[in-house]
Amino acid sequence: MNPQLLRDFPFFEHLDDEHLADISKLCSKRNYIKGESIFFEGEEGDELYLVISGVIQIYQDNHSRDVIFSIFREGDFFGEMALLQNERVRSASARTIEKSTLCILKKRDFIPLLKSKPEILIGILETTLDRLRDANKLITDLTILDVRTRIIRMLLRLAEQHGVPSAEGVLINLKLTHQHLADMTGTARETVTKSLIELQNEQLIRIDQKKIIVCNTDTLRNILDAIRP
Image (cartoon, rainbow, N blue to C red; front, top):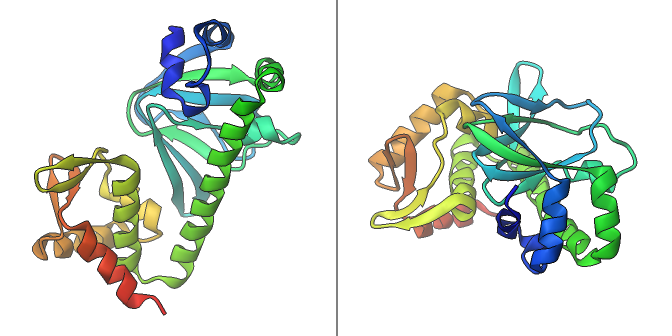
């Protein structure tokens, strides 16, 4: 694996070329097809995954439906809880949304690196805490917000995490199906489709080649602010 690819990951960006070369020797690279499972909730695991390319969803199977917690792409990582905990059981499942390439680091190889470079661990912990806060917000959203509000908040979250500026607003640079969006908001696909049509008619979003453009983030934020107690 090319050591310079590791610079895409924030907790490696400060390392010199020699350290990056050492880490790259520990990595194994694997290609996944679209829709392929990476691991399942409840399985044992001791690997950290770095996303070189593609899109990954982290989800739980809630009996009749999936609940998507996070979406990761190039420069993101996941599976870090297997490194930070003694218990090796996965708390969620991972599956590709697009054809993906991942770099895999085993715990037995990564722990000595963390001991020699504790700033890497600090970077991972900071990201993990941010993700826990996001997970708590998601649980709150699913519990107390109506469907339209959940969809608006989800669109703003995606725009913040995966948005790129465009002439019309902010392009969410992911091709997500209406089922993906339903699984992220705890609702039915048909309900998502209806809400997206309404938001398009209100000229708040536009859909172009299966990607969503948020045309007016300020208006969407104002909608959320208006419903807060």
